[in-house]
Image (cartoon, rainbow, N blue to C red; front, side, top):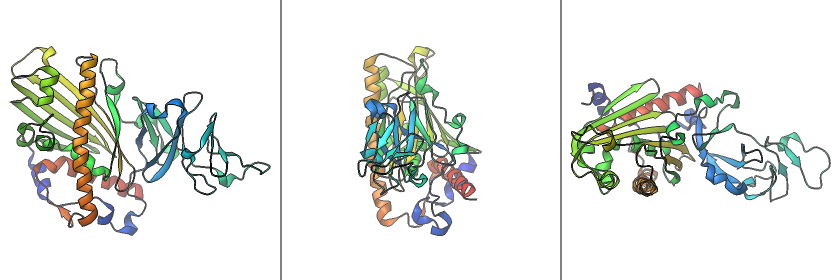
Length: 366
């Protein structure tokens, strides 16, 4: 059952954390937590020498793979006249701006200015970012470089474990990143948004427990003897009632791991189980746009038909979410939240997560 504390929490109004709800002087330039790892790209996006330009936390970042197979991450803006370096060309590991031909190295130094003798002035240097490739994802550190520690990269090990079989992709959303986090923390919407795929009434009618432990928020929903959703019927041929469980773990600034387990009710056969993780890396692009990197590793049926089914099914589910969230942001852009949102019991986990982020924003500001 849901905890009494969560009920009290849900009854209290919560400030909707968007730019318009904050004092401009208090929050100027601090809308996003910076001393954290964010996913910047999937490795496949840097194939064939690609120069990938991507806005992250409101900053233009250029990513590319170097000759020694490492990743370069530098500011995607030429300090001469603000042209995008991602629109330029490569000469080995050197990036050439195609506005006036200035050239830049992996460490951000300008190595050449056409028709200008001598060493280019130091002011032509571009910013660099700590970057790491782990768990089949490319992570970038947007804060103080000396604070970057790869040990702080969130645990997505299922995405790179030989006993798990992942699918995944990148999606772009036209909404604030915390709207997506709310959506993934509170799965009660499955019964309505995803009725034809993974949703049943059991998800919305069964109360969830929500708890906060420091900066970590955990939401759990246990659904015994409930109908199998259509997607599970396709994956495992479930034709009766199942015992189903969701456990959602949020860690700031915006990574979420969803643990999903299901078995036919009354079955003790481990081969009957359906277990997977949903790994969600949410990276703010701007105040109203978001990068979403997702992976769904499973520990059953490694065969290709199931892999394709998992990819197509997961993609379809996320596309349904995106449609709702983009429309939600459109409303917020026009009318805001009228001061506060009114919470219900299932909002407890999302409210906890927003408070964690707000407290950490205040801490970074201090």
